[in-house]
Image: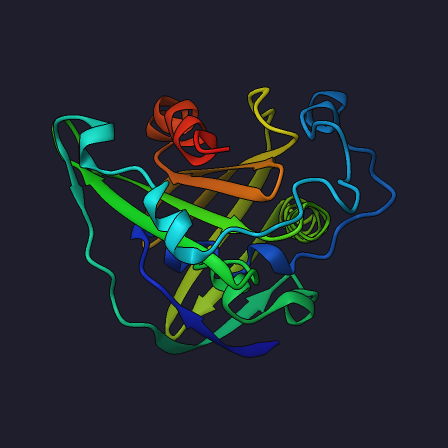
Length: 232
């Protein structure tokens, strides 16, 4: 299957998670109890913190260099480009497609994002995305995407002439917010293997996603959640 998608650059994640929402889940396989319990309170209902925040308000709640500490540099936003992408082993990619399929952003109009490089001891990256909408829409949309991501544990993505072997693993998320999702993405290409962690927290009408080096995601997730929800 070949699809035309817009790829954005958020370090390694932008190239490699472009196929993740596209997997065909095995509906006969039960999820591990630890993963299911990490989801939180379940789907939100209408009326629960249903007034979305503006993108400008979300921008003010993003982490900055001062929040992260020494060694972090904010990455400039790069222009979006169009790439032909072939997905092998995930035939449901076209169901979600678009910018969501690139890992660049989700399909919620009110959003803000930032990415940082960390070079004090290693060349690592961490990115943060904030979205706002009704609690019910954030819950349904995010759950659907993460279920698709983790439903296809192994597949391959061809971006131009580059083949990327992908594996996904659902992991438990910390007890933050109303709902939570987390996964490890392992990808290999050209003899190199990298692991990216993505953790999403829905707290009322705000959705937080932190992605990047697993150690940096774990280190900054609590701080990102606190700042994203401090004004509530």
